[in-house]
Image (cartoon, rainbow, N blue to C red; front, side, top):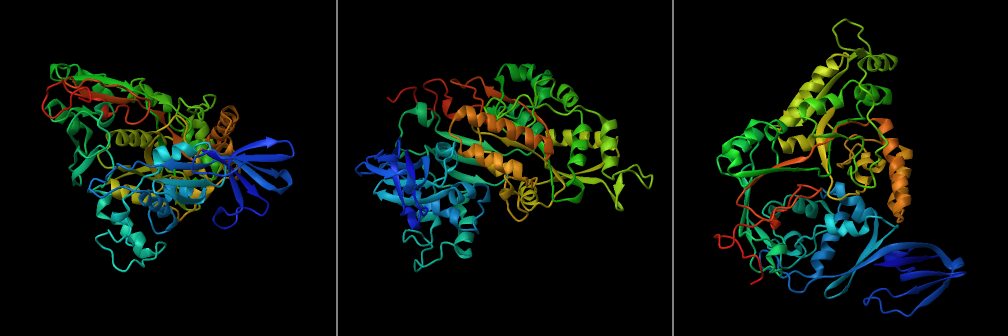
Length: 538
């Protein structure tokens, strides 16, 4: 990891007007020295008057393994990595949720050797390392690039990488489900709405089962209904089930011999945030006082007490509750339906025609709330929301959709409200994709479902992203948390622990505070069990 010194006049084409390395301040000058064996330059002193800016920690050079093989047997090389970065340049490719990080935030990338590549960030970025560790998905060029001679669909090698043909080819590629990866397990079978079957990839470079996993085969089953899934568990058809309902977790179902004799149960608070997003492009949600009234009209604390039996914790933001981005001083507004009615009336929403529903400009305040089909937690919550809002004259219509249609509606902003949950993989996450105004544009398929566009929020996000000092960044995130909550773009919900049932024949189970709360690779059967590796390399 190196720094970048931008000379007067800006970066120029292909970062031609920069120096990079380790930058130190020497009074009237900066000194730039190499910080990588791939940067064989002599130290250089530059007068500060000739420098436009210094961007710390913004140049990343990676070496990649020379013994990795794709699951189809094709050799992995540095061109796969470079190609995967260029994906984000094509506006047709459906990756708006990540595009800002690898296209907007990055000034360039260059291959610097047979097994090395360098990336340049435009600005200092607190989560630069995590960008590669968590989000940068390396794709097989020979599968996705029509200009690669090794691609089965290769023609003349002149397909426009920024054009619609190439973008559609990536979006609709069969490998998006029949995954060709680099990991210790390869997908053997993908049956939509049934299962994914994966098996150990014997050509994987990592041989230590403690890192690469102990069992030979994994089957991820799709069961649309949580009750049905729990019955499949009791019937011995599942080894791990991590959507155990609260009433089962604390009730008779997990105390019965059919469960106790065969399964453990455990829970862990991972970084999930339940929420209901309002579509701020809809006229009824454009007034912050209306959104505040809707927050006041639902008793979050009572819902946690009655539905989650005190297991859940209320949240008021979208950062991990245990991380530095979450401000514990921000609490939910008090449940106050009378004040909620007053706020609605002051905003022009009151019942003019006596039908029990508040109205304005001839329009009843009716909220169509979307939920995924089969999600009992969402269904119960929306039914309670329906009842609560009816007390203040707001009608809620619940619409259940299959997951693909549900997501399309949200991405296209074709909804009033939607009930969802953020899953946060790290204790500190980048709020840009969820809350920055550039991600809230109407035609953008992004994570800013609410369509929040606010100058103060944008400024805080931009300042926090460039702040490398942890304590200073924490202060910025606290202020951001307060600013967003005051705008009530969501009905903020709760952090519900992952409630997990695990076969007693599985050992090595560990719990984590990130999704899904456990790792399959940790788990092993008793040594000697068919289909599992021994506990050592040997």
